[in-house]
Image (tube, rainbow over the protein chains, first blue to last red):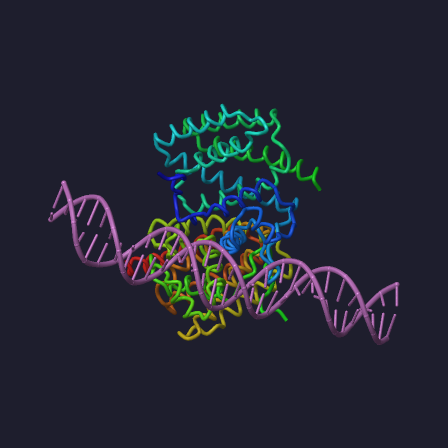
Length: 223
Length: 223
DNA sequence: TTATTTAAAATAATCGATTTTTTACACATA
DNA sequence: TATGTGTAAAAAATCGATTATTTTAAATAA
């Protein structure tokens, strides 16, 4: 019995420590620019040095850490410029992927989409269940573009999502914002099911832009 | 005195063993699908186990290796579908990057471009100097898109280039093909200098397509 | 005081050995 | 013959300790 659904492609199978660290980095548990104390991590996550270092190396290659020559690992800085960059690329790549998904997606995809949207809408978003909601939200966006036919495009989108979330998750999710996003999620499904690629792409870009504005406000509040 | 020009962004600073392995993987020194024998690698590259494993982990995160749960590392398979995917994305992303580079590039960029093209054209391409030519070729394409303003776009382009080269380098570079590509390189510089973004993008896509056809032929000859 | 040098401490990277897991093969059973 | 089980060999992953490097602090000189 698998704990995970097998990923669409050769995504490196991940270790528990990799998953935990990745999640904590995306959630903003470490300060931007912070230097990671390896011994402290070892103790905190209760792992040996070797698995820890291998996870850190993978995260550096993935872009969630900076590796400095013989000076260990550091959490990347945040910047307005990078946030703009990430948002712009997300619009471009997810827009592209959605258009292709609408072209290639079959009836199974349609059902998956409806299910993902329903689960997300139903999800409790009280503070102790944020993780659950975040997971379903990620899952929804993943489902939306899944049948685009490009393994590499999906990979890049995933990576940008993680980077974007470093900014978006600087503050707590506000119910009113969530409501607005949920409405867009619903409309995205409708446009996808009606195979209106142009309108769906436009809405996707607007959707990302809205998230971008939330993320930007939070970033500015922090800086 | 630095051996490398510092990279535009937080690209993980790489170790000698990482560089060597990456190069050998891109050059096709390992068969597609091959399982890597760690002890053999250790001996061949004359490195310890720890640095080797860390390099392998980074390469897996980068997409040049597949990491299987407790079953070590494997060279990814090649497929027609993936080659098509990579070529398509390269056209899209490098086209986009070139348009932006033409919008943002300054006089220094213009000079760098001319220099990169000149060095590439002058380069000897005899069999023992292939590495030199390949390096200058990479450098030329890098220079072309460098001022696009998007760190992440550049990162993805670099990654796709490496993946593409796994197919392109299945066979030796033929002088006639090189001649044709050099001519396109020259025209790309001309269009870039004249700031004709539309035409430059179109030519870039045609240029990638031509490389794609070469790579496809080589892939089919191998399979 | 400010800069530079030196020494000590802290931390990162590496190594060699151990433990765990997988794979291959022989044998037994249906 | 096909299928399953047990054992031995191989390989990967991990651990504990060592080595090398960087950082910090103190001391000396300008």
